Length: 48
Image (cartoon, rainbow, N blue to C red; front, side):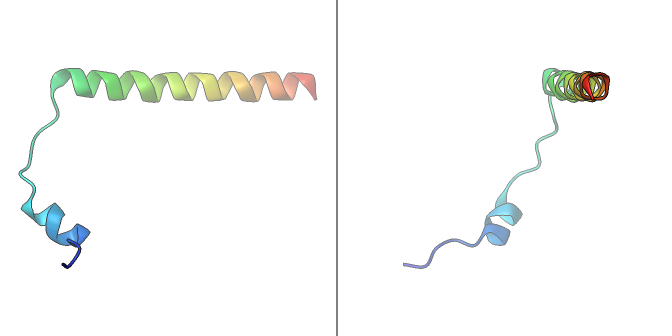
């Protein structure tokens, strides 16, 4: 039995727009990641 190819499966998928809560979660995750990265860089430079 042949394994399904990823490209074929992606073409079969139905487009589903992101829900508002999903957009909010993505925004919070990116924002938190950037803030924590800035804090990490500031701490690293302060210690060195």
